[in-house]
Image 1 (tube, rainbow over the protein chains, first blue to last red):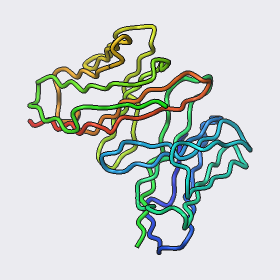
Image 2 (image 1 turned 90 degrees about the vertical axis):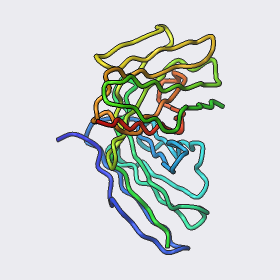
Image 3 (image 1 turned 120 degrees about the vertical axis):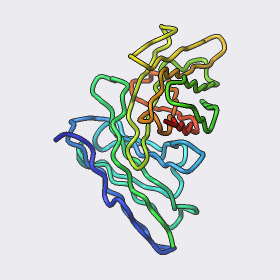
Length: 113
Length: 113
């Protein structure tokens, strides 16, 4: 079954700890994205990657880091430098040939205690 | 950069009524305008999109209209059903060869039986 898998679905973290959110896709898509969703603020772009071994900062990249060592995988690390990390995180990939459609994972909800 | 405003933030209608959600964008170079639906606890999914070379697009009970001069676009849902209840996001992007969407803040639509 093709799609995007995010894990974990729920994550709790203590202040000062880094945490890594996993995103894996088997759609053979080149472009992948990380968005942050907060109530009343829509989806905001954190990082994106057009191709393996390349990624770019989005609008709210501070306190986050990513890697793209494999086409299928685009993990996001929320570092201790992120001042307000509690949020819902969505990973997405884009179809071939700039279809325009983003395919989203089911999201990871991070809560900092 | 691009800014997308979406109204209303919440919308309650009776089953069978029509619902209209409006968005405005700031960058006149934007040329792609998708709408995503996010049901409670689920991932956002594309429901309809429009490109700047057309003014209207329909798909069964949903339609999107685009006014490039005024820089606004709208989602119209006719004969609403309870399963239409969800959060709807508009977005805008410039075709740069990959998707750098800017999302609106979302509209929570509630359709009462």
